[in-house]
Length: 243
Ligand code: CTP
Ligand code: MG
Image 1: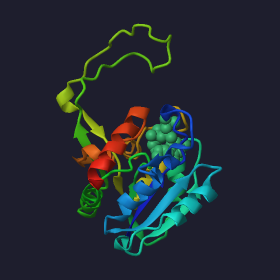
Image 2 (image 1 turned 90 degrees about the vertical axis):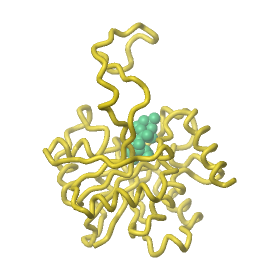
Image 3 (image 1 turned 120 degrees about the vertical axis):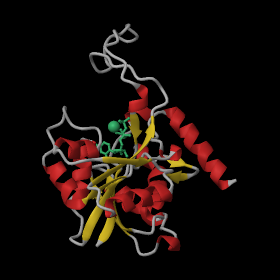
Image 4 (image 1 turned 30 degrees about the vertical axis):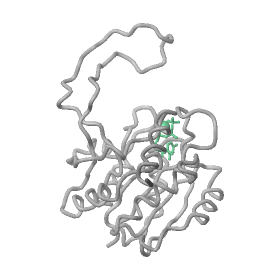
């Protein structure tokens, strides 16, 4: 039995602004994706990494990965590249499609979370191996969250009526890697609804099947690089690690 990690890296990074696809943007001089691959490969249980590249970028991604080989400490970890789709869900599903039969535990990890500590990865794997079909790293929410009636995109800057304020102490912000029993995740993706009402994470698809999902402690450094300020923070975290 092997543990594999699927890394969706096929997004454009629209919210980050103009430039190369987000996963290929440099962080400390090295593409974000390379950090993400190294971060999961550092976990000793991980033996296979499937990188899901932009539809037109598989060759470029393969070249970048070959230029940045894994350290010997990563052991015998295979890195496979496939191409992604129009949505994150589609990209993950394509990654799942190339898993070998010996894989029984699958993690899904955003390329956009390049600094996740190996301990967080190991904790997720351990919880799945202990019998949980779906495991999600999460942290308490620090901002108070307001619910409104419709998604963003109305008249710019127009005041929005508040619908409700969920109790903050009962909310958690979730991260990746999310870990799954392989068959559970395959089934969840096979039943994923068409784009539009799609879940924004893999565990959300599993929840829809009525399968229990549990949270384990996430890590501050597993934050997602989404907007330009996140890149500033990521560079600072990396500089602190290297100091
Ligand atoms: N992703 C993917 N395929 C897509 C869309 C997203 O593999 N069609 C991946 C991204 O590359 C990223 C992860 O899913 O590693 C999380 O998505 P997000 O942070 O939203 O990245 P982007 O979709 O690239 O960014 P944006 O939404 O700002 O365009
Ligand atoms: Mg996106």
